[in-house]
Every structure is written in structure tokens, then in C-alpha cells.
Length: 153
Figure 1 (cartoon, rainbow, N blue to C red):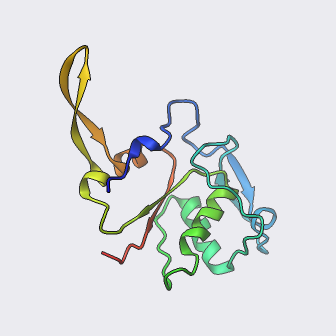
Figure 2 (figure 1 turned 180 degrees about the vertical axis):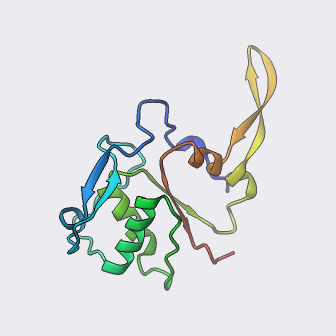
């Protein structure tokens, strides 16, 4: 099964690619801290929906927020089904930050991640064009990229 990066919304200039808002951690996440983290004011189709009943774990939330604040990778580990990916999505949702989850199962290939040559028709002629995969797309767009089941392969 191929991952179709075209199903994702590109940054066509309609959405800002630089965080333009600050969110107070105490107000947004209910954590006893006076800290502001970057986020976005405009809605984006890749922002997850907020689950108002979600309960944030303090330490995990702090690690995720540090990643957003300092543009760093964060690795969250735990047992299968314990809500690691959901935690990232719920933090992203409250920061209005686009988030894409990729399940690294046996169906995801190098082509899905990097890209491939694709034959298209232009003006009645076959043309070979490069079709970007997820990683080049993610580099060009503001997105929290969540690699789910990282250790499964």
C-alpha cells in the first residue's frame, strides 16, 4: 500500500509556514508553568481535531512542547496502544499545528517516504516527473511528523 502524499494539503501560500502565535502552557494544557510555546492562528486542514476530554501527562507534554518550541525531534516510547501518538496529536491540535501520522508498518516503502519518477501526460505527451514523497513534502511545510510504531520494522 502506497502512501499518497497528494492527499495532504500543500502549503500553497495560503497558510503561513512560520508559527505566528504564542500559547500559554498553563491556559492551554492546564500545566502549572508560566511558559509560552509557538503555534499558529490560522486553521489548517492537517491540524487534528481537539478532544476536549483528553488528559495530558505532565512529563510527556513537556517533552513534546520542548520539541515544538526548539524545533527538535522528540521520541516517546511505551507499550502499544497507550496513547503516544494521540498525545502528540492533541498537543498539535491545541497549538493549531498541522500534524501527520505515518504508520511505519510493512506497507510503507522508501518510495512512499522519498518519492518516485512518475509518468504523466502534458499536452498529449508522456513526461517523466519527480513525485515527492512524504519527507520532502514535510521539509517544505510546517508539520509535526509523527512516525508511529518506529520500532516495528
